[in-house]
Length: 328
Image 1: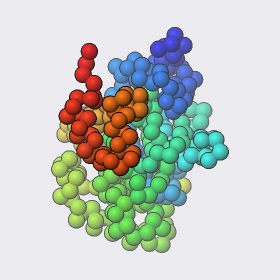
Image 2: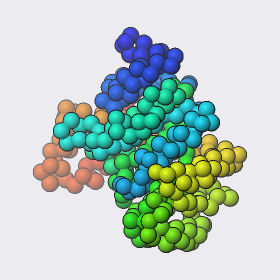
Image 3: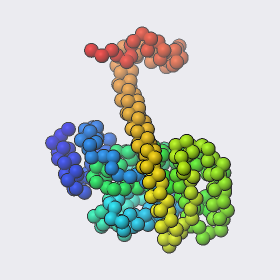
Image 4: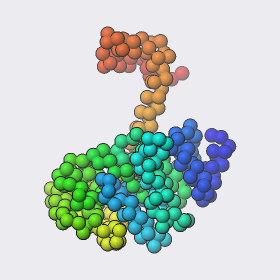
C-alpha cells in the first residue's frame, strides 16, 4: 500500500471526514488498495448497527430515513448514511445524490451522507456497499443506514448487510401478494406502510398482517424466536408514526442482542463474505490462465468448437490436476 494510501487510512481513523470520503471513492472505483485498506480498518469495525431501508420506488424511503436520522441525532448517536441510487448513463455516477436529499443534516458533524450508484449491480445495492459500511463503522459511526435504490423484485441483497431491515410500502405498491412474490417477506424485520392517509392503506396493512401470520413458522420463527414482524403505518412527511417505528427498530435490536441472534447474523455475513471473496479471486485467476495456459487453452478450444461439453471439460481439468495448480 502506498504511503499516501496509508496516510488516508490513518487520517480517517483520526476522524478526518475528507479522508473518509476519498477512501469511499477508492472503494467505489475498485482500487487495488482496497484489500489493504480493509485489513487496516478491520480492528475498528463491528461496533456500528446497520439499518436497511428498502422498498419500491416512490414509497418515501428518503423522507423516512431523513426523519430517522433526526431521531437518532436527538439521542446523541452519530449516523452514517449510504443512499444507493440508479446509475447515470452519462457519468456512471448516482442519478440522485445527497445534494437533493437530507439537506437538513448536510452540515451536521455527527452525520455523514454518501450517495452511491448501483453501476449495473442487481439487488438494489452497489457492489461496494459492504466495504463502505465498514469504512463508516471504522470511522466511529454508531448507526449506519442503508437506503436501497428501490428495484422491486431483485431487492434482496440488503439482508446480507443489515442487522435490521425495514421494508417501506405505500398503498399504491399494489396487492400484498405481489409483494410476497418479490421475496420481501423474507427480507423484512419490520413492515412500514408509508403515506398511510391514502386510500387503501388499511387494506394493505390488513393483508400484510395476515401474510406475516401465515408465514410465522418460516425464516423469522427459526432465526428470531419471539419476534413477529410488526406492520406499522407512517406519514413520513408529517413525522406521524416515526416514534413508533423507531421504537420497533430499537426493540428488534434489543431482541437480537440479548438472544445472541445479532452475532449469529454477523457470523453468517462474514462467512458469506469469505466465500464471495474466494470465488472472486478464483474467477480472476481462472480468467487470467484460461488462454495463457496451454492445457487450459486446449480445453477452451474444444468447448468453443463444441467438441467437448463444459461439464466434461471441468471434470477432466480437475481430475488431471491441471487446475488449480499445486502449491510450489
